[in-house]
Image 1: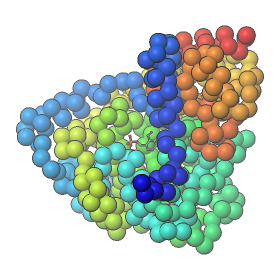
Image 2: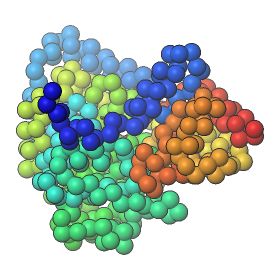
Image 3: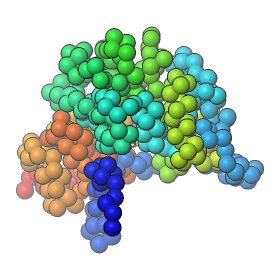
Length: 388
Ligand SMILES: Cc1ncc(COP(=O)(O)O)c(C=O)c1O
């Protein structure tokens, strides 16, 4: 047989999905595995959102929608950006709705780059950024942020890595996996570098609604940034809608136009009634998602205190998202080894930090979008493991 794609052959499968699958297989084989590896809220989608989907289906909204997104959800996204950040975008030309933010990151990278263009990705990074940059033929440049500074982005770090070929800064706040929320000083450093070097900024704001300390900064709404920033967001995390596959991007119309072309020639569109539910989610008051945020915050507080009380375990409180980035100096500084020990000896599945880039080494990621009872059992198992 003739050889298959070398490009796809060279791309690693998603590490987080691989680990979740391994944990599921062990569970199916009878082991009582507690999985802290995924990124899927344990809440069901709020009822007002599911009801909007039922109503859309019953009203016959089951045909091909406009490829770039139904007008109602595009309007809801533009209204949200205006309401929350004073950012004006034209819903008809500057918003793209897709089946998941993940596809959008791929589509926007494809729209922004030509082969050889460099995309700066800050470590620790969400696992899919680097493979996606490779898939579109761009050159990912991964920039390790030091754990010692709690992964802070500085002007010096930016200047040390920007070259003549740099095209895009890919920023993620609140951050998966560290839970860091961009500070005004970091946002200003990014803004100044982007303007000085004429760069595009992709701002992945998936965890925007899940902040416990600090305030979310929408990079596109900073001075001089609207024309160069593409905001990426979606419904998966804040609205507990991972299975609905709904993400959106807003940015300069030329960029959105190219990404929309890729969408129309590949996946066509998000699902029609999913978008109806997504519009309802954005238009209604946020009580339901606020209740989820408060629950994650309570879990964060309890878990951080419980883990730090165990000798040999260290955990900084994350300011946002729903992950803990935990060190086990009492076990090892090798994150693969820590994850293996936790799986083999404590029946806990988690993600080794090195999967998020070199500067994630020494950490493992625990998801706290996990049932409270499982979190408590996990702490108990870790306590036992560390005292053995
Ligand atoms: C930082 C970040 N961006 C984007 C996504 C993609 O979300 P989705 O494709 O479910 O919209 C995720 C999901 O884990 C994420 O953690």
